Image (cartoon, rainbow, N blue to C red; front, side, top):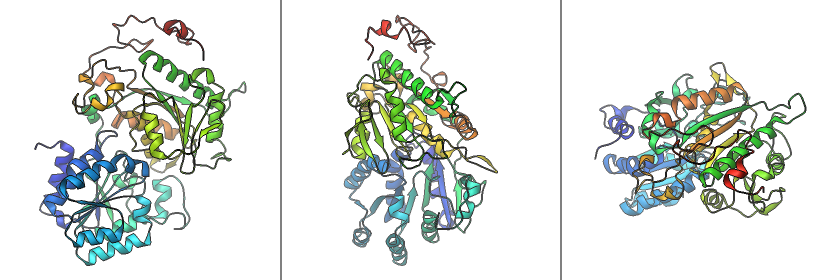
Length: 492
């Protein structure tokens, strides 16, 4: 089987003469967002490690439960097909390994790294000479090596280990002393991962394949394409207008306009600050309740009034109507993702804090706005990883009714999709006007984002309506006043 460059680099490294000597090191692989890192893990890398290198336990971790919900079925099928065991309980894992079964454990970072039991468990397996591999997904998130490194790596100071215990670093350090099979993967390498900042302790990070500007072109026909970025002034303007609300209106107008042109569901995702429901982070970041009010003030841009959006945070999971009243406050995270991706479901707004900020596949989300007012920087420049990840939520390819056929029937290429709509597959972003967000936009476009003009599609779009130039649809006025006449719809 011919491997792609990403997996061939992995094989070459693992089969090198000196690989077994590469202890106290995490080998990190980079790949642009929405290009199949987890697919490679399940379909090649994990079975390769177990079958070719006799790994007895592979630990896969992720910072978010939502990412696990999305990928665990594929890993469970892998185990079923190969007579591996899929487990998460330490005692069960130990019993299965002792019976001779290869085991795959897929757990959140919190469960893997912060529990005393799991550290004791790893030490016990090491004593038994069990061959273990680990792969930490979204490696830029939990990899800070010490609280003293926070100012340089994250852009804010920490005073002691009660603020940050470096649990992932300490856990991985224990394993890496005995196993070279210690890996990570990310699309947005942190300053420690790139080697700009050295780690605090003995465990080192090696970025095996840094992203190269322009190389993302190879994925252009299998991902969504970036459109316009709007930077907004998050302070009130001189005549008393609220610029945040004005930008929300602009985003909702764009969502409404494009959905009417393409006839495909288009969802707006709004990220609030990491604050409590009754407070504003940094004195500026609106919370979900405030954002819902802004949406309600622009109800004419929302067709379905009875259930317009969903709030998803670690504490709250509910849908709301145009007046901000709760409709269903008994939703689960997996139900929410399913509803967002369901083309027949009326939900058009997803409000989050940290949830769904990375790793989740949400093809319908193509308008992305953050009202989390931040400007994190260190002496090395702006800290952009989390912003790049949020922007990248719009990058999942979106081909409407052809979504389920995209890979099996159309070979993972927009070139093969009948009736492909470029406008529906274009994501737009709305960001606070700070250096951090501006630099994140530049980096995303340089190293990760794809556009129509670097694809092989060979179509030219109308600047007015986004349709191919061969269209016969009347153009829409810049102020959108002609929208109702074009589509013969009534104001909501």
